[in-house]
Amino acid sequence: MADTLVPEGQSGIPEGQSGIPGGQSGVPEVQSGRRRSRNSGGALFGKRGGLGFVAPAGALVAVFLVVPALWTLYLGLTNRTLFGARAIRPEFVGLDNYRDAIDDERFWRSLAITLRYVLGSAIIGQAVLGFTLAWMFRTWQTWVRRALELVVVFAWIIPGSVVAYLWRAYLAEEGTLNLLLPLNPRWLIDHELL
View 1 (tube, rainbow, N blue to C red):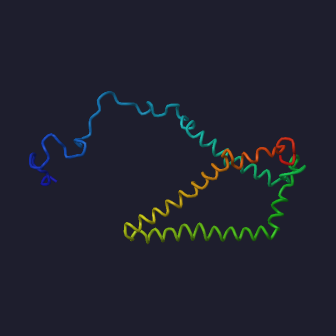
View 2: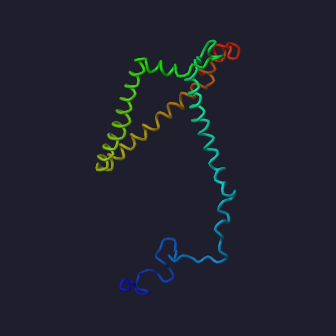
View 3: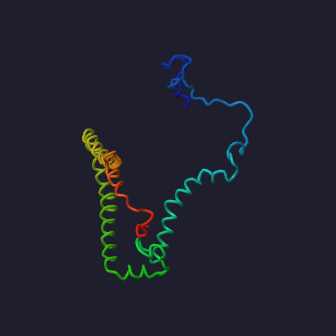
């Protein structure tokens, strides 16, 4: 290592400069003052202070995942319907809904179609085919890769643009929502809508 050192003045770097961008010396600075203790400032609210940061995410998980899952379980164990008397006063039926679904041949046909779709789309289509195409494209010329990247980005952008346009058309002054408002359905009076 000693033979790789360059004598001062022969390195081509002006004296007083380090050769590192920004003029840093490359040597860490020594901080003066008293040493901070391990616990000072680390846990602002004590040992359980992190719960305050996790609580909003936990609340969102509860609202959007746990509550709908419990509601689905409740619906599966009752005979609740969208309209009529059962919509107002559902009765507990236990596992009858699940037995009816398993005994129905349409359930098994739908399950088979869903599994084929998941296998073809997610596993073969996205994972295997996507990885294979990405592996092939890395060897192509730069302009071809850039054109392909542009096509992929457009595929991400266009659905959002279409949804934004549809919302704008729906909420416009002469849009669908304002055309439906004068029809005046009795939302809170007609129990069949509840």
